[in-house]
Length: 369
Image (cartoon, rainbow, N blue to C red; front, side):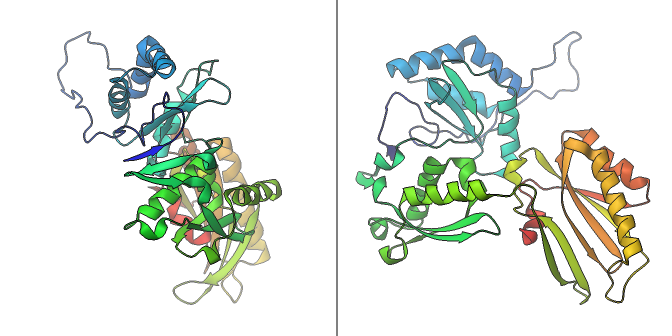
């Protein structure tokens, strides 16, 4: 069992209780229904109806008194109806007394569910606020983990930092004097937990690259404060809407150029999970297979027209050009039919081919990141 020292009145769906269930409640999908039966509420709407009717008051009382033994299981079941793999926590809020967090645990496909849950939430008030990812825990370095009876002071964690300014990312090696005594992947598990508490779930996804552990204090001399300050500097210096120019060759050995957003972060657009490729052919080529200036101007105009037709419903993240073809890479919300439909309609005007694949996390373009 892993517990975090601190205020025992706060419930945690990740560390102090079982926040997961093995199966989702079955839904009656019968074809024949009695005439007049009301349609079942959407699971997210049903959750917030339950929260308004009883959950809010019961949890508010529980975090004040520390009593409410059945509430963790009640919350877990309510969220299981939304999705069985969602986790949850409660903690101190910043704008409100308490914060209810529903987490996708780093799963990009599940994050859109958590985001939809949050967007349906009531407005924050003085008692409750809500979040779709774990938030930084103030003063976490002063806490002590209890791992199967072993005391684990979080303030003893140190880091080796490798900063990549171009990608706006920091690779970290995590060290603790007790890592050498811990079995298997337990040091890595503790490292992920601590980084979530220190930076918040989205902060880790946004700014931290590779995460490894080490038993050598020589390579890890930076404190948690040093890591936070390095990220704060990177945040202050970050350039919005940057694009990087990359070059390579196709499998056939022809020259290829890529223009891509840098950094390429799905976490900034968690609902944009549908990847649409628009393939544009050009006949006027240079000797290396790239477009002539006339062809390039036409390609740019087409790209501008498609992007304008899409508007804020999606985002162009990259295009690659080689051997008489330019491929535009767009991401939209798969639940927003008007988003990807506008790309398709604008592409048809110039006889361009389109293909679509679900891609939460933007893994299709990881080679450009």
